[in-house]
Image 1 (tube, rainbow, N blue to C red):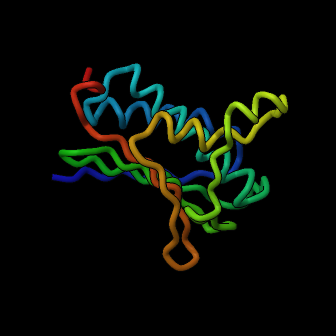
Image 2: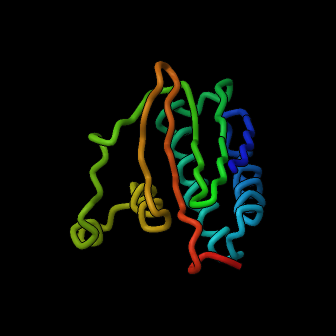
Image 3: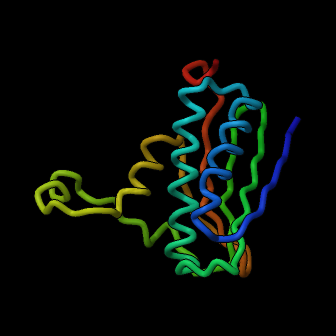
Length: 143
């Protein structure tokens, strides 16, 4: 059995709390414990922030859609948009040792997402683009 839930909002950072609150609620519905729910919401926050910043260049007239799918095996969260796409081939995770030596700021959102989630991928279906975050429903995450 699959459960679906979508929420759509303007590409404005004022809606980040809404995105994280909805994510935490959906994680709890999927049976994840509070700690895991908060971690997943942080990954969603990063994905939404990247969408607002990089796909839409802070154009508040655009829309972001969160699509939640709960299955027996996993929680799938798609952060969807119609802005500038990114592909899996464009993703380059930094060498953290080198990153720290350079005292850089920013650019770690995807690293954070990949450390939290079981999988992170990017794709497109025509003009609709998404960042897919997947967390398996296993014992380590159950509340």
